[in-house]
Length: 227
Ligand code: 6GU
Image (cartoon, rainbow, N blue to C red; front, side, top):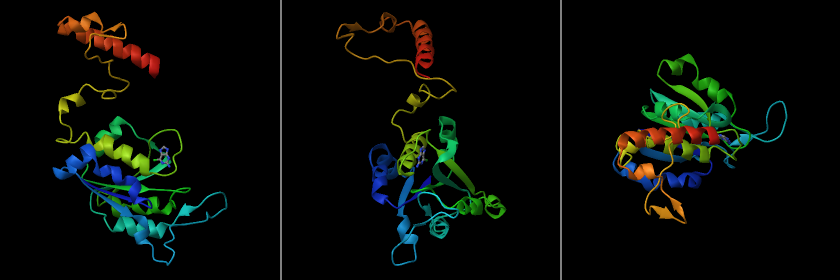
């Protein structure tokens, strides 16, 4: 999978090179490129934004800068992901779908967002027939300063689903959110007693059938309490 991320703060996305993702890049499973949006400006001040038509607070990112940036990497079959608190909620289902795609372009908006004509342009039939899709995505119901952190959240959730990224892929099959509304049961390890609290007896029994039943009931209790 190829990932291109565009931002006015490239250093902010540097963690994408670390840890699991760094390994996945060494193995050739994903190839992540981080681009400075300002390199697609054409004025002396490297302007990326201007005041909104119709008035109001804040600044809006210029469509031509984003158009040049996206055109520089666009292919047939690209998914353009525009990060915005006004987007479709990002869920495990959405992560699963994106994990099957070949090219993700992350457009990190700052200020009051990106001129909406960028979305409209890449949603036109010309691009649709090339298999290009635009997605406005939000990672939750709160407002961040920009799309950079949201991009990191999405890239981590998406790439860990790809074959070869995780050391132990079987950990994928039992985790929270695999099924709608399912959260994982509580886990315990050594010692069997810690600060006066015992590990539940059933987990020491070796009875796998009963353990599975107990875990399911605990997962349901946890979901009721937390969600
Ligand atoms: Cl994707 N961007 C921003 N700026 N804020 C958000 C968000 C995205 N998702 C939730 N809040």
